Length: 492
Image 1 (cartoon, one colour):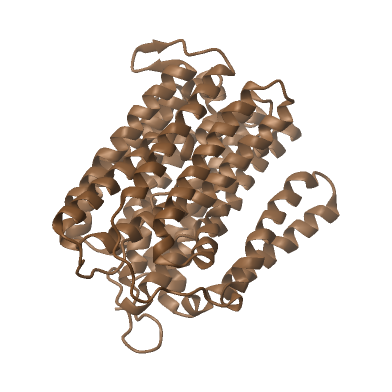
Image 2 (image 1 turned 180 degrees about the horizontal axis):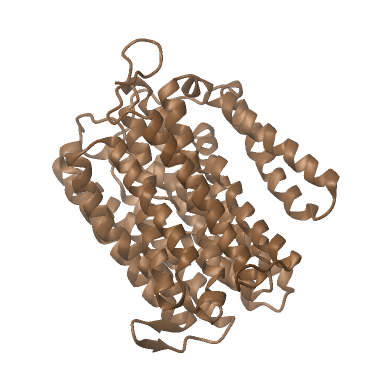
C-alpha cells in the first residue's frame, strides 16, 4: 500500500455528535487494522523474501510489488461499477473481506504439497488482489468519514489513525521478526521453521482484515436523497481497456525471455495502456501545472517499487537469507515514518506545498545512495529512510489538491490514486537489471555480478527520483493556485 489519501470537500454533517464520534472511532480502528497487517499488505519486502525462498529470480520476486501498484487503477473501475452511497459500507466490507480471503488462501496454499510454481503464482496473485482492493478500501474509508463527520471534528481520529497507526505497523513488524527469525537490536529470534513461518504470518493477516470488514459495517451514513447513477461505459473506456492491457504487458514481458515477438507485443500493450490512461484523464493532463505535477509524482513514485530489490540484496550485504531481515526492515520503515510524519507536518505549516514534495523526494534519493554505498548492519538504515520518503504519497497529492479547483477536486484525487500505475513497471525493470547483470557475469571494482546488479538497480531508481526533483525545482511553483476560469492552473 501507498500513503496516499485525501478527504472530500468539507461540509456540515447532519449526524448527531454521538454518531459522528462513533464514525471517527471506527475510522481509526479500521485504519489501525490496515497498519497492523502492514507486513503483508505493504506488498514488496515480505513477498520478495518468500519468492526468494521459493527459488524465484529477481524479476519474479519483484512481480508481487509491480502488480500491486499496477492494479491501483482498479479503485476507479470499482467506483464506476458501484457508485451508490447506499452500497458504500457493503463495498468497503467486501474489499476488506476479499483481502482477508486472499491472505487465508495463500497461507493454505503454502501449507499444501503443491509445486513451487503454484505457490509463486499465489504470492503474485496476492500482490495483485491487494493492489486492487486495498486502495479502493482506503478511498471508501475516506468517503465514509467525509460523509459521516464534520471536518472540524476529525483531528483526533486522524491523529489516532496516522499517528498511532504506524506504531501498530511497527508492532506487526516485530511479530514478523519473531516468526521469520533474525536479529533485532541485539535480540535474536530463532523464528519458526520454513514454510510454517510464512504460513502463520500470512494467515495471521486474515482475521485482522476480517475484523476490519466487520467493523466497517457499523458506520453510520446518512442516506442520500439523490443517489449518484452509474456513468455510461463511454466515460470509462480508457480504464476498461487500459487495465487488461497493462496486465497483458507485464505478463508478456515476463515470459518473453529471448522471444522478440513477445517483447514487441508487450511493448505495444504498454504503449496502449499509456494511451488509454491519458485518454481517460485528458481533461486533467491538458492543464499545464497539473501535467507537470503528474510527471514529477510518477518519476518520484518509481522509488515506491524498489523495496523488493532492497530486501533481496540483504543476502549480499548482510550475509543471511532475505527473510531474516524482513521484520526489522519493515520496523525501521514504519518507525522512521512515524517521526518523519510529525516533522513534515510541521514543515508544511512553515513552508509551501512544493517543499513537502522536495523533502520526501530528497529522503527517497538519500535512501538509494545509502543502499548503494553502505554495507553491514548500517545498510538497514536505508529502509528507514525509504519509509520516510514514502510519505511523498501524502505530499504529492497535497500539491495536486492545492492546484485543483474545488469543483474538480474529487475527480483529480481519483486521478492521484492511479499515479502508481505508470510507475509500477519500474519495479519489474529493477529486477530485470539484476538478472541481466547476473547472467552476464559482469564484475566491477571488486563487486560480483549479483552485487553489481543490485547497485545498478538502486542507481536506476535514483536517476528517476533525481529527474523528478529537478523537474519540481525548475517547473513547479512553490505555492500553486488553481485558475478560476475554465482553463488550467496558473503558476505564480
